[in-house]
Image 1 (cartoon, helix red, strand yellow):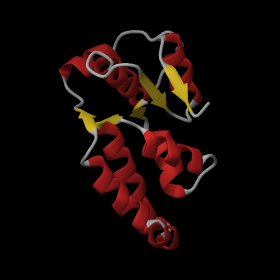
Image 2 (cartoon, one colour; image 1 turned 180 degrees about the horizontal axis):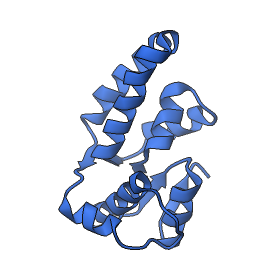
Image 3 (spheres, one colour; image 1 turned 120 degrees about the vertical axis):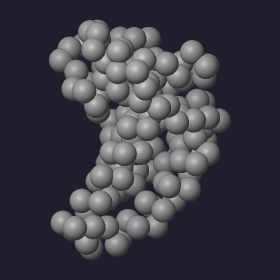
Image 4 (cartoon, one colour; image 1 turned 45 degrees about the vertical axis):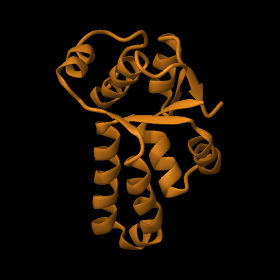
Length: 141
């Protein structure tokens, strides 16, 4: 399975949220993992805030954060370039769509041109609804 990892699923995995084991297994089993540069920035910001606001949580999840950084070096990372920004400004099937969600949707559309049968790994209901409306499968099921 080829996966597009959206930020909500990445953070559920890293912080031990609901369905984290299922998300982790899907990532482990994936042939290809792709994501947006936006995901890497969003995850980094969450951990930067945790280190200041909830240092115990940051310390407890430091190993997962380090593993994420190592794993992401092996992934296909879509830059947030002019084409992504241009796509973000056009409507999506299920509006309203927030800007960061639009970046993820535009990224998976772009990546689908080079990665076959990409499945959107997300726990965000707006991203999932739009991904399905755009013809992508979503996980977790």
